[in-house]
Image 1 (spheres, rainbow, N blue to C red):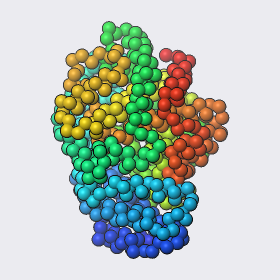
Image 2 (cartoon, rainbow, N blue to C red):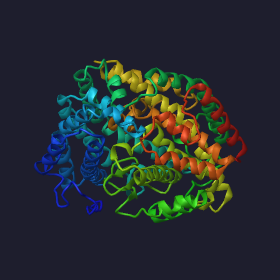
Image 3 (tube, helix red, strand yellow):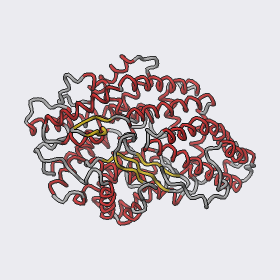
Length: 575
């Protein structure tokens, strides 16, 4: 379990308070509601106390969530997590709504002219617009369904070569040079997922219904419209996202098709199958950046890369320790995926992942390290927790940029220059392949939430149509129809954070721009990167991109030249 936070900095929240006890928390919220907000000084003092309370409660909630993700099979941890989401959050949500209303009704509101406050006011108005008491129990039910999904995924293991292995560990065998081994590993993993496909379908159907009801309660035409307000998406529209998908279909899918044809020819196979997509085309052993069980090596070498990008990055990364800030190895009973969680009261990040000794683990560590920098730097400058978190579209610039800036320094993990080049190629090819997959997930979500009342057959048909649209058409999936139809179930974002996936595409374009900037002027690029990250959520999304020296734009005009640059870089690398 995560280490308890320090409490000596509290001035409003009692140091000995039980943050799982609503009876102890409610008087603090009520005291804030009762306080007068006549002057700007009143507001600033009130916001400071509300921020301290939100940080304490928020960190407690984050720690229960982290513990539940790390130990999906621990009943005591699950009980504590469910208590928080069932009995604490629902009772505190109405206070949060009333406190936002209180600020928005303050007579001195127009005197809060600092841009930070204007951002806060804009977001809180959006939050108040869609808040409904009747949505609180629906949110609780959604959180419980996510926990059910996590438990199903966390329990998935297979028996392979005399050992019980997680699905993340099985991914290692997709790099095996023996095609029969790859196929066996792929089929075992897929068959294990399909065992729970029906249960996951049931969970998702319940989620769809709950989300539709939340939108209805908030007087929104559909859950997509609700989400746009909920996510404070002020700077782009659903139509912009659909146009982005169109641009990807036109500018990226043909390049991925060519990559697949090249892979098929290089492997010398009659048909390219799903288990052929990761193996080295020259038959070299899989990349092994570190021993699968030795995550300390992963951390040490990641820090060495940050040192070479810029020493200040290594110094900040070096503050992270196991138990307190890191849980990295893959094991049974652990939720899938990776994330960085911001511990608001401690001012520290927590990085969660499922490392198994593959190159993707290196990319994930770099990625989550970027998120960690973002939080550490923003909270060091911005005292209000409400303004420390930037829009997700820019948060992902912080993380994806680290993956790209690290590419020239991958020799830290690979002593053989040929292996470092292979890793760079794998990363850049992954970027090209990512865009169509992002378009699949995002486009599918638009369909899901604008077609109320659809059934499972219609959902599956929509998924397959969308998948066909953005697929290269080269990979042969004949005989694997059930696996293809259920492939969306692997995308955790569809369950935990609907409509949170296009952000990765928007941010990848920003990260590619920063990568080019770094190549021209490393010192200036890192300085602007740091400057932009310290702004947290205190500026509009386009202004955050501008502060980093890049443009907020995801039209074809920006996409196409950046994709061309990636293609040229790939062409310059040896196979």
